[in-house]
Figure 1 (tube, rainbow, N blue to C red):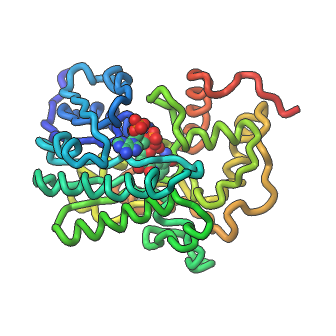
Figure 2: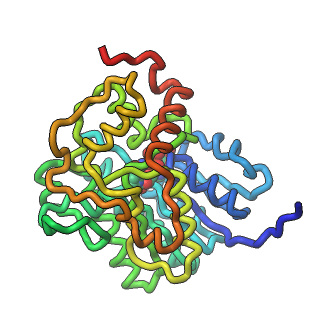
Length: 331
Ligand SMILES: NC(=O)c1ccc[n+]([C@@H]2O[C@H](COP(=O)([O-])OP(=O)(O)OC[C@H]3O[C@@H](n4cnc5c(N)ncnc54)[C@H](OP(=O)(O)O)[C@@H]3O)[C@@H](O)[C@H]2O)c1
């Protein structure tokens, strides 16, 4: 059957070879985008992007760009009318130098991307923020479900040395300030813990959360959790936000809000052969559960994949890539 090829705009994806970035490139290719400028950290291997379905027929161009290098970022954005800013250090490990390792690349890197978008009259920037710019927020009303109006409490995070939420929150605040000052069209997405098959060769931080849980970790993810989401839904949502003229503001992207302890129970039921720790009580004190927390995306038409599918597919992928032993045992 003949399909009609609708011309899609040329777009730039920063951090294109990472976990979310690779899924986004795949989703754009599936959606008929034919000109994609993919930025990667200098020296990173982008070869898995060229193995994606339809990559061979597209104009997929790789640009090496450290996001702190404004000229390199500018070269990548030139010629595009859409920018998906994904690149940002994504690690939950304690950095030695938080300002240099996390905050600066997140904030100045984002500003450099926005500057380039402004310079080349980009129609819309889709910023990949995070639930980490929404929580932790201990001042939030105790009886209220978290939504997009919540902002992470920076002093609380700094006093606990939780630098990843600090980096994401400062980057997003700088984005809205820039957008308002320069009249740039920006929409932000706030994914929860992303799971799903790894397209990239290395283990990313959010899939490592599941890997470690399956290996018996007792980490409660207290400061970094609202729920989980399939990475393919995040990529679909990013494209949806780019393509929906009426989209604006912040979009929480999670298949429900619930305690990490509940997630661990679900994982344990799916994979009883793994020594998943059973948490006692609340892992996120006071967190109120909600199934349709991502109402704004659901209203735009996004249908979320069951979290069980995301978990199963992640486990298969972790095993296939050698990040998870086959013979774990509870004993
Ligand atoms: N995974 C999640 O659960 C989750 C949830 C919410 C939000 N996010 C956000 O989603 C984005 C992507 O995360 P991910 O899960 O896909 O993690 P990831 O696989 O580690 O991807 C991060 C990407 O950013 C690139 N990057 C980091 N620092 C850079 C720099 N200074 N210059 C240029 N590129 C740089 C990395 O390049 P190299 O790998 O080549 O160094 C990588 O491609 C991040 O903004 C993260 O905060 C992730």
